[in-house]
Length: 504
Image (cartoon, rainbow, N blue to C red; front, top):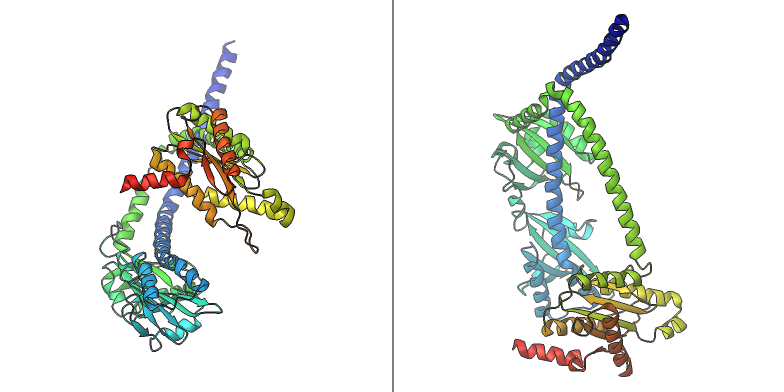
């Protein structure tokens, strides 16, 4: 018995001792491995962080350029649609672009370089240093120092009636604010360079030794030939990277990433002192591996919990995805009939006193559209209507297709009669400009009935009947119009007029 007890005790000790010994060996191996790798890993982490930061600045810079370009989009579309012969009108359009973007100047010119700026002054850019590049460039962005360091955003307009360029001038001094409140030290700088190393713009006050010459690669090459050669090779291949360089008493890490435009690169220069501080921080944050024995258990528990949480999240996401699919009308992308009714009923139950509007709209002569232009075109009309009308209302409003050519719109929280008139007018105005079809444009109209919750129906069925009665009135009056259930709101024109009088 005693021997058996001893054997069990010995076995019990071994059951704990062996795993503990194995764990200690593992911990010691981790510590040794940590001492060998942690410094390198810290340096790699800092380098990756700096590259990510530089890419973020690059995205901001390109977004600024794209923002200027997008501001020109409406005017470009207008010019492509119809020629603007009036200089005063053209100057007004250019001024709108300047006021709505970061551009300091806007110019429209013909292919010979003659044109007009936003001030209405006639100018010629034929002799400008960028005019030749303008005619040859494959990208919309051209760098020039004609007036000041500038990125020229060029939109070529070419139609049967008009040939020319819409030019927007983005000042690189705007780029100079990029590093404000960045968290880097005063020795940091950010610069845009071309493939030859020419400096196009600078943000930050550090790195004067590298930047004063106007060419970054040529400045660092004498004392850092290998680093400069590596940078040139990697940049020519569109690769990201870092290089450590020294000029005089200035020691920096240069972080470079491609901007994806004209072979331009964005270079972040941070002092080696800053890098050393970040590496030390990374070292300290991971150095305390003595607690790994406890952490391993904790991590294991966390992993189990995380796996469970992730599994639940994915399950919920999948369920939500299935619910969304079940709620969606496949043709229009709007809510289907069941989802529309359910969501409206839910809102009514939760907000019984919140004044809201229900629209029921029916596309006029939809059967004729199907019969004359085909069911495929009829589907395109429904699809276009769903896409366009869904875009003019709030995301919180409920819009759905509840029949073949019948749609329902439920606008939540409409405060007063003025707002009612405004929203009704919005729907009427929408159909005045609504067109469907990619090649054959068809101006579809609709008859619309409107009822107000809760005054004209405190539940879904009653409100629907009231709105349907309004729809009946609209059709009876000749279609292509909106009618309220209540005769007190006989037309949106009267309601809008009342709202206008109230404003006056």
